Length: 357
Ligand code: GGG
Image (cartoon, rainbow, N blue to C red; front, side, top):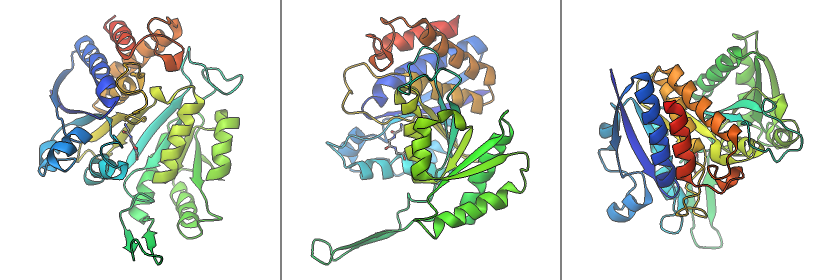
């Protein structure tokens, strides 16, 4: 069976880490006899927007819907295109139209990487953030009135539906139930955001009745963020709304030393549309063009994609490979964010060589 994969580098360092993600993917495919058809696309990038006046071609949905997965880099180049236009014109369209309602973001302190938190060792930080990915605070419901006048009014709604919230909670409970600690943490702000958030808490309880084996704790987002820094070892699976999940899944990897290694899977769990795999980091204009971006977020996303496509051994081999390269700690190979003087390519090539065996 051939897996059709749409490859979309996007913007900034997305274009630099993607070749290393593909190098790892192809090495794993060769070793495990997996047949991949990799199809590159230049849309969902700010360059495409500047040429065409939109982030995606009119027929993007038809073009992508029969692929088995989408492998994405990063979006955004604010000097050329306002961030809300590039994000809403690309990634958020994919997530919503392909109903990728789970955004799964592992957060793990890797061997050889120094956490900025004192005394933390690999094994101390190892949890998942499950982010609701199609509604919540990321809604386009709202508008502006009396624009540019003293009476200017701006409103944007949060949208939460029982279908949307229950299905992501179910996914999070099932993930927690499958892990040894069987612990779920829910992030809200039910004291201040007094309509949607208490309702989310109610749904956590209602859905949880089906998972008595899972222990549940609820935190307000502010103290939860503090506890990510003070007690990252407390967490196993953390479930949150779209905005809170987005913030926590940058904060978590920052506690593991670098956001450069963090992967994500935007999953359509019933498989009716392709799922999308991308690093958590964005296009990073501050380091783009220098060849020093850490490719592990993209490489690890490739591992998640292979696992999703039914090849857990190949995914595991990729993870083992980058963990081995990080453990060796060769400064000529590693990128600066993990203490080296190497480049995106030196690290990517070392990982691919290790996968090949
Ligand atoms: N590779 C992820 C990426 O490009 N992220 C840019 C960004 O701003 N994402 C916001 C989001 O994930 O909702």
